[in-house]
Length: 219
Length: 232
Image (cartoon, rainbow over all chains, first blue to last red; front, side, top):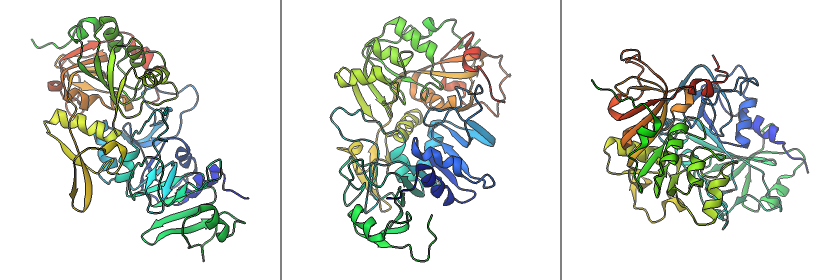
């Protein structure tokens, strides 16, 4: 079976983020989206620790311990960027000021419920960070994740079995098999990876899906 | 003459008592007031409640405070990190209490304490484990959860420069929790890279006005440690 690579998924998300957008990229896989934003398109990256206009990683040897991203990796500040404290940073996130956030996920439900912070395992150490704030606060919540678990179960589900991050908050899911919009009419498939028939995607997913790929170019 | 400068970190943290609630600034290791934490470990206060975004990195700073068994409870948003092994072991052994708070609620609860707010409603965490048992209200068609402020006895934070009135400016993203923690604690203790004369800080650019600051300790040599290769 063909799959979108992680780089392809990141590129597909980047393609959908317009010029002028204020964007928060979650730690892990979503960080890769930054590498695929077209150079000519001005987009403001927000980092929850207190940066707007975050730039790429610095050249080796020029890392600054006071200038890191949410994943604690060294970054740079673009010309025109700004620093601010945590309450201001989360006002941006919770107050509806961010246009997009991109998050990883364990599961997304057909209503757009998101589970991405805790497996609920007995020995698991929980950590939530800003995930719940982004889930309720960003205008568009995009998720990047594998479509299936390692054992082949769909991560798109009727009801999340992992602890929830937010209710009905996800707008779109980008997986290695498809791009799926969460709409009021249910899940609408916008793109499928080449060579995967819609019926097979629906079988693997196991939830009701609407085929919205007609007339669209595949990603 | 008002002079908030204190000569040593030991003197600055001397009156932190057993059972105190202590806010510690920083996000990961950026903005962590390492020298003040080391002084607190040396001082010996125990049964502390610590408020920080994380739960320590590696074996130094906050992690060392945890390892010394001085912390009864930690209030934080993201304890699990690649190098949080000290916290992880204490937590799994049941030797530390964890209050896990969504990061925006952590920031806003601290801010609310500093601003005299009694409580606030927020949509964050509605319908999740982290809102279980909490009062909720439907406001403008949206579900909200009631959250209370977090007050502290002491805040330990790190800034870049201060004057003797306690006015502060920070450096880059190390600002993070500093300004809000300074406002939420009864006594705010700040370590700074540089002490400057009154008037040296641009009044238009002071981030934390001195009213929120009680003690300031200049740390000699931090500049070299903090900025191995400053980016222009």
